[in-house]
Length: 113
Image (cartoon, rainbow, N blue to C red):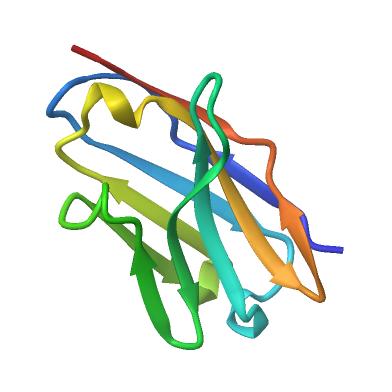
């Protein structure tokens, strides 16, 4: 069983930056798919960024503003979010697929206009 713990959310003004962290309970080097999702109030959960098979993919809405990175030595993945917009407001979740999908508890990101 993989445990994921997100941190780094908070309140920021539009145009600001935040860095989210996701600490995994096992070696992320062996995880085929690990990514960030978000869910805004009243909306479906959506993929933001993911690392899989050596590639990193991004949702069109965050390309050029968000960057996902991973530190295998710390078993941690990050999501650097720049030029934040009010529409980025959501609960952000880390997810990992190891036979099944595991989710973190989520971290709230609120961007004020």
